[in-house]
Picture 1 (cartoon, protein in one colour):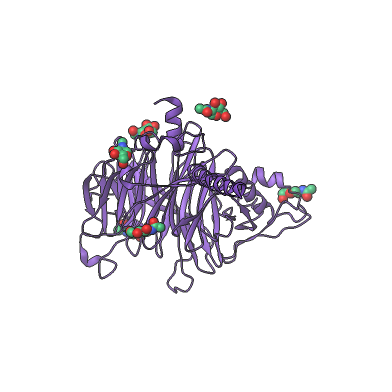
Picture 2: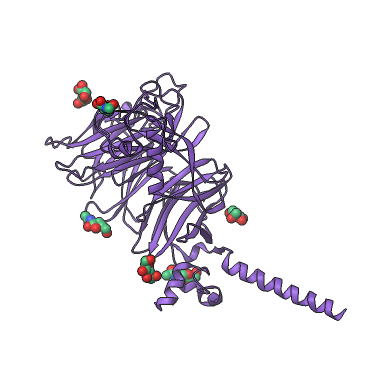
Amino acid sequence: MAGELKWRYCSSVLVIVMVLLVKCIYGSRDGQLSAYLREVFLDESGIALNQMVVSNESGTDYVYIGGVSTLYQLDLNLALLQQESTVPSDQTSCENTECLYETKILEVAPAPIGKLVQCGGPEGKCEIRNLMTIAREFGYVNISLVNEGMSVAVLEITESQPLEIFIYVATSIDSNNPGRVHSPITQFEVIQQLNILVPIRIENIREIAAIDSTVEYIQAIPWTIYNFFIVHSGSEHRRLGRLCSENLQDGLNAYSEIILSCQSYSILQSAYIDSNDVLYGVFTDGTHSALCSYAMTDIQERFVDTTCGCVISDDPSCSGTAISYLTTDAICSPSPNTNQSRESIEANYQCGDDEQMLLFSYAQATSSLEGNLLGEALPGEDSSIITLQKENTTVALVTTSSTSNTTLSKIHVFPDHTGRLYETVNLEVIGSVLTDVYINQETEELFTLTTKEVLKLAVVNCSQYKTFAGCIGLNHDGGDPFCGWCTLEQR
Ligand SMILES: *[C@@H]1O[C@H](CO)[C@@H](O)[C@H](O)[C@H]1NC(C)=O
Ligand SMILES: *[C@@H]1O[C@H](CO)[C@@H](O)[C@H](O)[C@H]1NC(C)=O
Ligand SMILES: *[C@@H]1O[C@H](CO)[C@@H](O)[C@H](O)[C@H]1NC(C)=O
Ligand SMILES: *[C@@H]1O[C@H](CO)[C@@H](O)[C@H](O)[C@H]1NC(C)=O
Ligand SMILES: *[C@@H]1O[C@H](CO)[C@@H](O)[C@H](O)[C@H]1NC(C)=O
Ligand SMILES: *[C@@H]1O[C@H](CO)[C@@H](O)[C@H](O)[C@H]1NC(C)=O
């Protein structure tokens, strides 16, 4: 009898100790927004925000925000420096009756151009502004980059002289819209001209084939000489498209797509490629989100599998088909008689520029690449993702929005490709998170954009932990990984 009691006593103590340990090591804490929030920007009149870019291209750091019919220039403390309209000065020439101009593209064109490119409105008309002061000075350039749907864009500057600046624009197109433009992805060149009234011309250079069914482009991500796009079409919402800046065929034919997967989460919503060449993808099942990581070497390998699968049929590592939502023009005819090998496709045809040599066009993977699961069951479906890297420590910062809450989840990423969610912070914002996000790696400050507000947040606050010392620095797995470093380095 006594023995039994003792055992019960012991086991309940054991359970408590274990619960405490599990809470310290594996549990995430609920962080207080007040410990991290530095600044907030919102337009009191409730104007919806669309795009954000942070740039020091002018020599000074500015935050540029594109909202509906409005452009804002802020300093790094989110103080408003200038606010400008983006609708035509002559409002009778507005493209819709309400004269509402959503910002669809906001990019900083680097030197030698050194200008802000903003495109919006129903016709996606572009304006050029100075970076130091965004007042309307030049007016619209003579081109519309977007004719329909929402769009995403990446801007790229060539490495070879003369420097050329390209914008790759991917536009969501509904195949049921009879007035639709035909090609969803277009390459434009931004060209400086001597004419001071219109200092910049934007020229349409090339575009991919027309669409056959509805396609949506969610985000554009530049990486080295490649430009990636998150693509949703048909029942496949986990596509990653890739263009190479050296794809100079008229139809950008080497554009290809692979499929990423992250357990049962079936919609890729946002992505980021960090300086360790790891792609972080946030997926959703419609209610919750999950974070997976992929080595860029594996992603590039999968593009080789896909493209060689459209040429060779007798190499089992090669498997590709034609992109399902594009019309004609796709060449994907694997044959056993080709004198090409997987190696020759990899070496010569990933970023090929020769029209005659084209062996495939618009290749699509036949199976998905499974990621390393770093975190799951994060609340909400819309997301943004970026990482903070200090010493050898990487933390993924995933912001997710459900209809009622926006939550920042901090996930410590370990070298063995596992992750530990160590803190969640309810951001208490109105509006839903958008994919544009920025981090200052030196000051460890995160700039998060939602449809209504911009937040500047500290990622780390070790001083708040004084009373929780027991939970911090147990080992590298305990508490805030950056505060672990503080303790170790006694700073
Ligand atoms: C860290 O958090 C504490 C507690 O919320 C707060 O008092 C302190 O101001 C914060 N430190 C910094 C540098 O913001
Ligand atoms: C902008 O910041 C980067 C990184 O801090 C720096 O290398 C670069 O020189 C800066 N550019 C300008 C124009 O100040
Ligand atoms: C705009 O460009 C088109 C073709 O490039 C040209 O025909 C037209 O005259 C231009 N319009 C203006 C106002 O420059
Ligand atoms: C290999 O392919 C090239 C390019 O298509 C062709 O010119 C050459 O004749 C082929 N060689 C053989 C042995 O089939
Ligand atoms: C970081 O990683 C490198 C290589 O793995 C190692 O040599 C170095 O000691 C690490 N630095 C710290 C502070 O752990
Ligand atoms: C969402 O926010 C409400 C109040 O704004 C709060 O009561 C609730 O706990 C939050 N839910 C989560 C999952 O954080």
